[in-house]
Image (tube, rainbow, N blue to C red; front, top):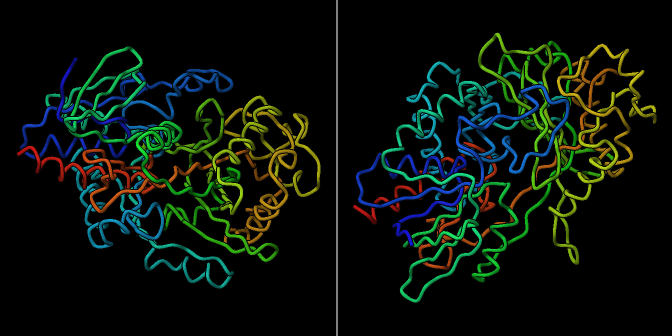
Length: 459
């Protein structure tokens, strides 16, 4: 039996910055970080090595391992409370922004200082969007790029390695609260660990696991929404006037037909579309790079429709999973369709794709998204594309590519206090796994917040 003061379950953004603070601040805590994925240097997606489609690695290297799902993302940190989570509802808006600014300073100090800091606050785009019934959310954006992001995380790991023990390729089989107040943690390798403080920082991919822990410990959870949509890919020139100015444009539109909200998400100028595996379900995402030599000819971004459910249905993630499974069943993974084919009610065949002027950056199965995505969400997406065409002419071109499906699973909100501590004393829930945050910047900030609290206990 190995004894620790603090065990961190999950090496994603929140866990990484928690470990950083526990290393930086002088304290006597003995700390272990556990993750079911691989060390940073071994996180290699087979598609990058030449595989034509997702081979469903277990665990997925895109989603799991040191740095979490943010590691091989495009490394985009949005400093804002207008989207990306609700950390400000727990620690206050001013402190939430201060924590995110601090995260930004750490990233810059570890090699991100050359990355440009964009802002949408005074952009002319906001005025143009409003004139077309589109709403641009305000944020400062630091884009590190996948390549620079990996290097920075490597430096953070090296900085923490003398202080923080790590255990990769490991999952937690059981957690018990002992009579003396300590936690007994049993791994899938039958190792027994104990700790005084247990931090649940599993990220999105650990949503089902963290829910099971909360159920066992009788910790209340509030169901969140699920966002369902597509990833749009088009020639970079179409959005160049926007991405060169603000880089990440979070644009929200309320549809006329259903009065539903559709939003752009995770814009990747000169990037590529990628597949990711969440609990065995293949969905789609996007990456972009800092190195000009790695830039592609297209820009991609998600269009997402938010779905909230009332009684009697409660499991929003199950709804999103069922749609993603249908896409996997029909296409063997990710489906791809030209926008022109979608609005004309026909599938995109391999023959039609050969004539397409926009070259896809992800090899996907040409098909018909109307057989997968429910009519309401698809109508909303089509209406949003025509709305975006007003501020970025060419968005509604026939050869604009739509990949499906993109699903953003939001963990149930775990009931925590202002310290992100649950009702079980010594057990904390933070980052995207807690449902409190939905972004790299806010997840990282939550790790800093709890890191400072725990460091104070072990001074």
